Image (cartoon, rainbow, N blue to C red; front, side, top):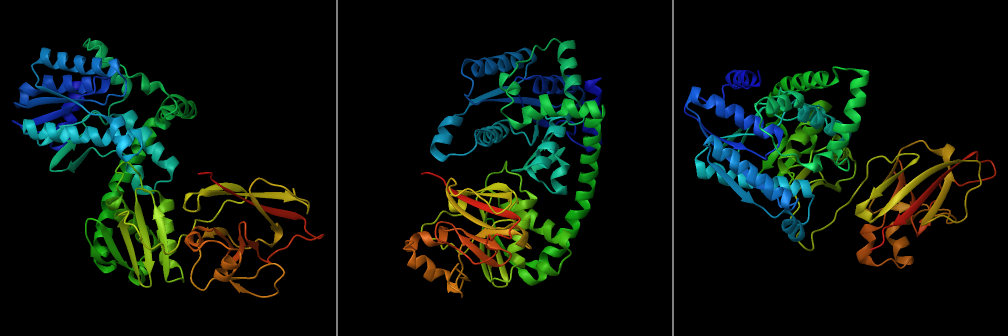
Length: 471
């Protein structure tokens, strides 16, 4: 049954014409072993030349080495050439940092490319299946993806001149495991797949089973939604391509310059699509999914009345607004690079948010009455909560900033306030300014404004607590 499903998928997509050379990524687990076995059975019908590649990440000691020996032995039994390559994930992380799974994926794909070059394969078959698709869509949804992220894992994509195909993407895990049992493949089991410290595993073993109790066909519903999103994404790509010439002034592999006015003249849905497409092309950590929060932060910079703003984004990408141009670029890490400005998204009230740009965390609490603790951890300011009319944000200082310090009965330049407080010049751009709308209401550890003081008539109190991270 599984063999015919894979054969039909390959026919429908027009993959693997007769005589093709295909490289199969094989971990030794049930999914990849089933895929390799199915393609091995189909190969004589189409004169396909198969080769396998196994990557030992060196993360599980003897178990990793046993996986490699198992894959090598099975390929030998079936007469399939097999390339086994060991990579050192921990060494790369020590040298360059990064997320373990992201580094492992990067090294694994590098090994895939080398093996494809060795065997002359222009197609790489990977064993992602329907359950992987459901988990991926849910992970992206949790992280704040846009509609495009709901398309999930693509059936096929071009990568470095190699076509990556996923023939099992419509097949569920239980079908794959049944196939392995039927054909006595005895695949290897990776115990880390049971570790619920990983988000994907928590979804797999805890969240999805609960959702299936609500809707037994929950996974099928997610797959249908993913296919619909993929179809609609094709239409959206055409619309984005149509307007890119209107808004992009200059573009290369490292940066893209947008014209602010034409960008803002587009429908807001197109604005988001344009920004997300460019960010996805620039992001340096290729496993990072650009969230809609990042897209909205870029658009807020474009819409701002202030001519100079900088926003730091995931994946070592930065957005800089300079008058009527918006630069989206990869960070170079060059010393002396000018920091223009940072502005946060609207803050949760109540809630807590990490602000790594300022090396700290801001906690916002609401309390009944006008009594509040005199001693809080960190630096504290209190306001009359009923005076809240706009969102709260945190940003860095800008030229010409002024505020109304409590007790001054007038405004004063923020620069002068920081000078008087003896804040070192090199630290001033990293001092957080808390805003109510456009008004600066608090500089933690320095001064609060005269906005919304707590009085005897105050019924609800807004308490802001700033805590700096220790070095």
